[in-house]
Each structure stands twice: as C-alpha cells, then as structure tokens.
Length: 421
Image (cartoon, rainbow, N blue to C red; front, side):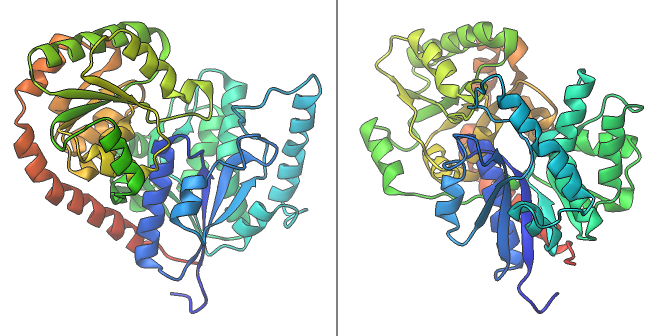
C-alpha cells in the first residue's frame, strides 16, 4: 500500500433525499474506512452546482463523515428541481464541450471534481442500478456518457477504477451506448455485481471473468444509529418493539393505483385479523424529483385507510436512523428495496415488492428469501398475507444477525482485493 495518505474518490453519488442511494454510499464508505482508515475520501455528486437541490444534497453523508470532501457534478446532469427558461437548456449544454475538453486533457484542472479524479489513487462507483441502456437511443447515449465520464477520465490519467455493487442491464449489443458500457467495464480493475442476474449479464456480454465478482449491496454494511430523533418518532406514534409492521410504497407507472388498492386491503385484513397491533406507513424517499417523492403514494394509501392503528411517518431520517427504526418492527413490507435491506440489517424480517430491474428478485434470492417476494404488477393482498402468515418470522429474525454479518464480511473482503495506484 502507498505510504502517502490514499486518495479515494467515489463518483456518481445521488441525493440524500433518496435514502437507498444515500445508504449505498454510506455503506461503501464504512467498508472503505475499514481497509483504509486514514484515506482522504471524496465524493463527486450527480448534482450540478446550479441545481437548487445541490446545497443540501449530501447532508446525511456530511453529518456522518465530517471529513468527507464533496464536489458538485462537473457535467450537465439531471436536475430534478430545475425548470429553465427558454435559454436555460442552452446554458446547461455549455457543460458538454467543457467536459469533453477536460476528458481529453486540454483543461484537466478546470473543475475541482475532475481534478480530484485525475489525482486519485482509486476511483470507485457508488452502487445502484444506473448503468443501463434504454429504447431512446440519443437519451440513452447521453445518460451513459454522463454516468461513465468519471471512468473515462480516470483511464486517461491511469487511475484504477472499480464498479462496485451494481445491477447491470444490456439490451442493444450493436449500439454505441452498450459498446461504451462494455469498454469501460472491460478496463476496470474490478466489476462487482450485486446479484446473480447481473453477473450472468456481464458474463454474457463478454466482460473478462477474472475482473468479475458477486458481492452484496453496499448498504448491507450499514449500522443502526439509535438517535434521539428515532426515539422521538417511536414515542410520538406509541410504537412498541416487535408490535408493529412498517410498509413502504412508491409510485411506479400504470400499476400504482391497483397496487395501492391491494395494499390497503392487506392492511385492513392484517388489523382486523389481529395479526399486528399497528401499521406504520413510512415515506422512505423524499425526493429530490417528484417521481422519487414517496410522500405522494404514502398519503394516497393513507387516505384509503380509516384506522387508528395506522400511522404515517415522513421524517427526514438518515439511512442509519432508518435501520434503527425498522429494527424495532416485527416485519417490513417494502416496495423501496433499500427499506427491505435497512430492515434486514436492523434484524427485522422483510417481504419485498419488486417494481423494476433485477435487483429485488436477485438479492432476495441471494438471501434465500425469494419466497418472500412478489411483483408490484400482480400484487395480491390475499396471497401476500398468506405467505407472511406461513412464514416463521421469529425464526427468520433469529437467523438474520449471522446472515448479515456474513454479507458485511463479503463486502470487506471485496474491498480488500482492491489495489491503489
């Protein structure tokens, strides 16, 4: 290992309003610090400096890791809060040639984020499910470049880079966007898939097997944070440990209304059959875009219920605080998959609802919990309630600590294989 202080840059970090993405980054930092306790850690945000949501984008990460350096995106990026005037899009497009110039080395130090990448000892991606291609070719190509430019720059400066704990989806083998993804992945030091479905896709696309590995989602490295804020929420809603269920829902396409109707049926039956004393609806993700704001779907579900036994929580809890809060419940019924991970890390059994991509089914299969999973598109209250009733929740809870410890060890072992510049 280098004698100097290692400089590690985590790229493509989304907004802390999305607690799943924030939890992934927090878990990754925990794993990196276990290996390199003295490392200088930086993140490159996906939020551009001009975004109104940018100043508060990484509040939980900054609070959790006070020494963390945060750089805004050097590239035109998706800004969920930005409504430009007629010239606004043209002003944003100016960032495209600037970034291209920087990538080829003409302006290597014109932005702090690019300077940090060029001088790093290791560049590592924040995990998630954002490396994929889609039907709209030009939009897909733009998004692919936006997500991969940090690795292009790292390659130019011979900085090793790693794709960590990702889900992957390939659709158009002859298109430039898919070729760009394969090229970046093939030159990485390591490419880690977070479930078998994605690993199979990488193998099928011809990514060298010697750089591939299967590891858990980085959020499994989280630790519960039992703060006064968590205790206040529990007290306010009169929640006793092991005597309530937590439920997360989200809006997702044409299936949302039918899904919420079935979820309301499930909640009413669970209460009327005295399967649980209280139900807590948690808006886990609060933004930053309207589509990511779970308060909308949560409130819509709450309006279908007229029960004193149902509470709604919209507090801005950090990932670690959510782990602690969900850990007090008897069961998590989660549509936001990271609410499932947070609950499991907290020691609470979980039932997962998959809405898109391979992550939910793949990770539940990795956990030997595929029988506790269904699709949003065909969510059936009777079937899900039956599956929950037939499950031995106390036995699942007893087995979770050893299972989660094993996943944490796998993450540590993965980080231990990484080599600095």
